[in-house]
Image 1 (cartoon, rainbow, N blue to C red):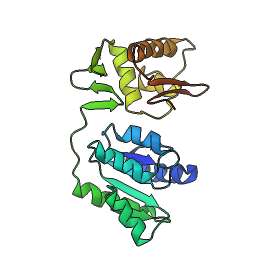
Image 2 (image 1 turned 90 degrees about the vertical axis):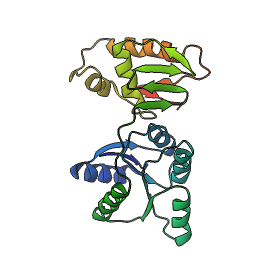
Image 3 (image 1 turned 135 degrees about the vertical axis):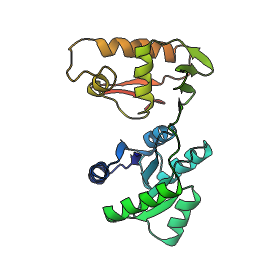
Image 4 (image 1 turned 180 degrees about the vertical axis):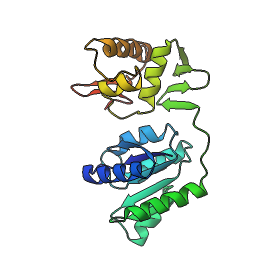
Length: 225
């Protein structure tokens, strides 16, 4: 099962990621609401767990935006705000369950299992979307604003990797392992060349760039960070 965790508290996120992975879940972590929304809109998660108070975009706004875009992934809200009105707001925003902090990991896992029973897993998404960039995973066809892009097999693999982690900083090491299956740095400009070509294909003639370099860290795909 694939989980998206949106949590800005580093210690809480570390605890949850560790606990979820030890329980057999695959976890992707977003550190703020804007990044979480970008990843959540891809629609390839079985469940989303989001804190309510987040930088850039609060958790309820994330849920409302996902629901407005037709994403039906079950969402569990975590919050220190535990009054009845707070819980009602979370459910009315589109959340499927609301868990008040502090909580026991065992209860979180039980609530996740209950949500997954009520929302049986759907087939993996066959289409990724970030802003006006769309990737049909079955036909391997990519369009930007309706314009079809001609990409090589390697560029398609690189783009899919970035789109599945939209809003998240992707390091060179992650790209080497995830796209090239290399577990060492060949000390070449391999990644730079492919990112440059992909950026030219995707961003050329568009109103906004979608591939950004994060100096000293890696790359991020999405709106201007």
